[in-house]
Each structure stands twice: as C-alpha cells, then as structure tokens.
Image 1 (cartoon, rainbow, N blue to C red):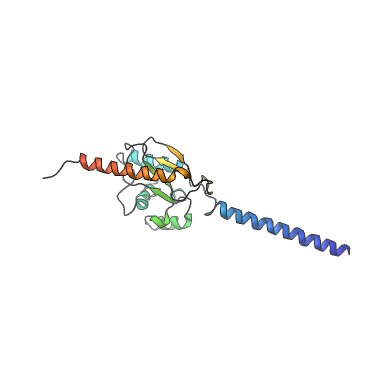
Image 2 (cartoon, rainbow, N blue to C red):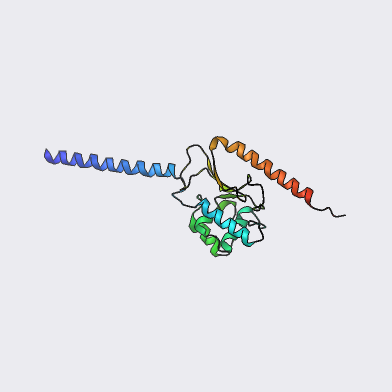
Length: 190
C-alpha cells in the first residue's frame, strides 16, 4: 500500500513538473515569438549616425531594397549580423548571407528602414523600427507598439499600438512632402 502511494505521488509530481515545463515553453513561444533577442535599436542608431557622419551626411542608400542598403552598415563594419538582422530573423541566416558577400532583403531583415533620409531631414521622420510589434528583448508588446528611431536628432521614441495607424499615415505624408520639396528645389534642365 505504501509503495502504491509513493508511486502515485511520483506520477503526480512528474506530471506537475511536465505540465509546468510545457506551460513555460508555450508562454515563452507566445511571449517571444521569434525567441529572446537583444537586437538593440540603440546600437542601430549609433551605427546609422556613424555611417552618415563618415559618408557625407547620408544614411545608407542606393542598393536594390532598403534592407540591402541597410546591409552596408555591416560591409563597412558599423554593426554586425546579430544586430542588423532585427528581432525576427535568425542570426545564422543573416550571417551566412553577409559572409557570402550578399545583401539582405525584406525577407531576411527584421528592421523597417526608410532609405534616402539624412540627419538633416525633419526629426519627425521615422528612420528605422522593428517590422513586428516587439519590445526591447523580442517580446510581444502588450499594445502593439514599438520603438522608432527618427532621423537626425529625433532620437528613439515609443509609439503605442493605438497610435500606430496614425503614425504610419503621418510618416507617409511627411515622406510625400519631403519628396515633393526635393523635386521643387532641383533645377530644371531645358
């Protein structure tokens, strides 16, 4: 009888531990859908500003996609594969692309980068943010918000999920206005 109780207790404890581990793993997957990551937007800010400082006041541009242009930060040693990947892409795949001399594309870079801006642009213009609403270590944000790096001395700001649609709308308008102003200020050729 005592052996049965002991066996029953072992089965119950083993089940409880197994259930706890399962819940922990499931919670981790829900909370951190791409795994825990520390692809710091602060490091990206430093890399982008150093690049602009060393390249005539321009952030990376001119490649086949914004993500490919962002790859120039690695080619010039301003950052590494672990940071340039963003929080949604495995570092090993990004490292492989870069080691082969390739450039990143939309499918293998987790950062949304607005190509063609300079530090002299309107500091309300977004330069970089995570493509997914993830927090500093790759966890889902509670409200769908995210950190955004702004051009020039605009710094990094948190945009909440409820403000995100209006933020994106404002960004499209700022970019449209910037592009129109650039066209108007260019001399016409006759």
